[in-house]
Length: 411
Image 1 (cartoon, helix red, strand yellow):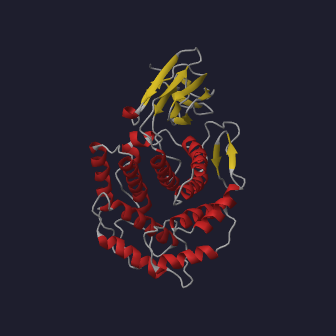
Image 2 (cartoon, one colour; image 1 turned 135 degrees about the horizontal axis):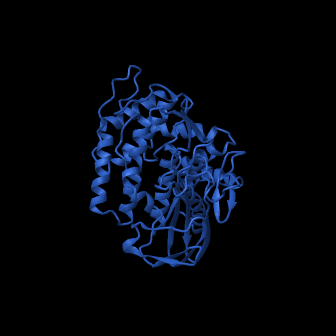
Image 3 (cartoon, one colour; image 1 turned 30 degrees about the horizontal axis):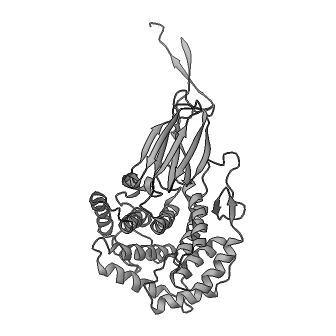
């Protein structure tokens, strides 16, 4: 006898986050909808409130300060955020001994990773597998050089890795100062002919590509080329996107889906581009109040793109965006003032989250039981809060799978 059983296996967990950076007196509504194609009862939602824009990253150290492993880019993506987070906490006076010990352990592991096999084409031994003598090797070597240089303030870095990388990059530089693929990461502490020659190459480059303009604005800021930087920033300002107090940049024809404006995240290129513009504004010798006002609008947009764990969509945009957010947090840090956020459910139940200096790094969390529904956020006091609403659900697999089973007539 044959029987047919209909079943709908659960799909991969879907996790979405809505982030709001609320400052001073502010209100907002967040609509939580439950799609039709999810397993019944699988939907869950919660809200987290933090008194620090780096709070989510800090509370997910096991994810963002992950133990380095794998290829070169993966290693450095897990290595670099350690540095930015430590720099911010140290400068703001919030670096606790337990966080310092954990971060330094990860940094030491990353800088002391087992050496890669010798590179027959002469690329420097950076401590992990990487492509040799290619444009990617140039960018990765520059990235490692910057990261190792900054990490020396926290852990011991073998000096030969720094000098070998510098020597190798110098050999790859062309006569006019350019590289076959110009490195994205420069350090203005390296005031030598190689850097000066590369800057001359950049100054001579003419491009209207917004991504390149954002990179140039940041590089010229680091190098102290104020006039060149201002020209790029003025050009970028004409191509920015402003909406709801947020400021961002994107490639032509790339916009957020209009159907889910509050839950849809931007593409990695848009996040990285916008983060570089933020770094450019914050790399000026004197950051004016107007510049900080512009930066706050960029931060508001960037924070909305974060995933539930404080990262972003991919590797490179996570590194650049966290660096930019940490720099902004350092410049705007204030240990004074109390702040409160009230979350109101669709039925009118209110829950208060009180924030002050002693708990600004503490992630306060509460479940949201009423789904679907619209929740209200109300903030008041002196300061800012990062509020994140996270929804998780299991979608069904459509069409439903139909499986035939054969039953023995003896049963």
